[in-house]
Each structure stands twice: as structure tokens, then as C-alpha cells.
Image (tube, rainbow, N blue to C red; front, side, top):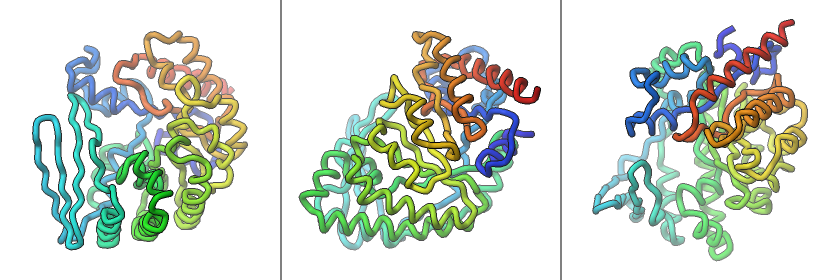
Length: 366
């Protein structure tokens, strides 16, 4: 059975006799390649060759996300101006302009000013959302199916759910949550527009050949506290899941921050599973709490704390958390790192988990 077959069987809840180990190592690889610090063994390998060498599967969002194309209206234009370490992006539309500023660092950038600040900005963003076109790029899908091969089943993640898109992409945390109280009618209109215009996205995804669909929300209870979650996110989760699961898709969200206050909602949202729930010492929950919250039939994607892959941490912690994940959640488990290995992580610990999974497979077959 290939990793691709195993990946699909787990989400379809068909019998399996192996553990699927699917860590995300892309950030580790890309940073170390750029910095010239890849270990000697991997310096001449492509990313996929590293996965193969480590004996693990791939979480192939990066290959398939671009197959769902979201194009702006032809009347939207973007101008970029660079000044020192800052990039200013001006989005021009027939109903007004949006301006955002990003501060650049050596390996990253962060928003200094978000595009949406005022109620007038919200109206411009609504116009942009209502005039987009969504379509599926079949040629790109087939190309990347050939690239990934049997390493994993195709999977994608959707743009963030309403509140998380506002506080991460459009407005920032402080301005976004403050606006819920200062401009409730304007914010309700923006949230409704996000929900309604996502229908075109859902239709395209529902009709596409990709079966495994992640909601790339990055949920954290400080960014989306329980009252906000219950009012705005939960109803949209239920609506999205009804549409996509009705079309045969398997759905799960990405919750990668503190989520102890949100785990009680886990069985209300209608998902097939959850990705990246971050255990202690990174997050605020234990694997035991996650097991209790998900119950017997939901799939855990990931589970092993990222900290276990640091050289400063005892190898026994990695062994113990791997054992717990397998014993607590298999066969409803896509084992991974919650949520990816650090660029300074020990990549050989990824190989160790591959070996541990092989040992468990041998016991399961006896």
C-alpha cells in the first residue's frame, strides 16, 4: 500500500495496518537551503528527495493549493513601492484604494499597516471580494499529481474562515476585534460578504477531484475567543462542511494556537478531523485532552510537539509522544509535527519517527 492509498483510507475510515507519518519539513528545507546550512547528506537533494530519504509522506498543500485559482476583477490594479526595508502595496479599484505596508526582514516580512482599517476600507474590500472569479486549473492539478506521485493523496487548504481572515489577513488582531464593537454593522456586512463570496470557492472545490480539504484557519483562542467563535465561525463551519462533505470531501481545520477554550466545540463543527492542535509545551492542551475532545471517530492530523525535534530536548520525549499519538488515535491518525519542524530542528529525528512507525506496523501485522 502506498502512502497515497494509506492517506485516502484513513480519511475514508477504511481499515489500515500502518501509521501514516506525514511531517511538514518544507520550512526547514527552504530556510536551510537559502542559508546554505543544509546537512551534507541533503545538499544535492530536492525537497521530495529528502522526504523519500527520510521514509515519510508529504503534506502536499504547496503542490495543490494553486490549482484553485482566485482571480481579481480586471479593474483591480496593484502597485508596489519599495523603500528601504518596507514594501507599500496599493490596491486600486473603481470604488477606492487600499494601502498596506510590509516590513521586510532577512527571511520574512510582517505587516506594519493592514489594508483594511476604516469602514470605508471595508466597503472597498467587499467590492473586491464580490468581483473575483474562482476556477480550477486542471492542467496544474495533473502536473502536480505526477510530481507528488504516490507520496500522498492530493490535498488543499481553503482561505481562512471569516474572523480569522479579518484578524490575520485584512485588519490585524487589535483593529479587527475592536471593529466588531466599534463598527458592528460594517463588520457584520464584511463578514457576510466573506461568507457569501466563499460560495463560489466552495462550488469549485466541491466539483474538483481533490478529496481532502483543509481549512487553513490558524485558529487561536486569543484571536478568536469562544463568544466570537460561537457567533461567527461555528455557523460557517457547519455550512461549509455540509456543502463539501455532501460532495464527498473530507474536511478538517488547522488549529495551531492555544485552543483549550475552543476544544469543547470540536464535536459540534461537523469536521472529519483536526490538524495541528498544538500540545504542551507549545500550546495549552495535553494529548489526553485532545483525545477526550475529539472522541473516538475524529481524525487527528499531526500531534507530536515541534519542540521534540530540537536538539535541546530529550529524545525520550519524542519517543513517548509518538507512542501516545499512535496508541491514542490510530487508526484515525495522520501523524505529523504540530505543526512543522523548526529550521533549527534535528531532521534525523524525523527519520527516527519513520523507524518507530515501521516498528508499530510490524506489531500490528502480527
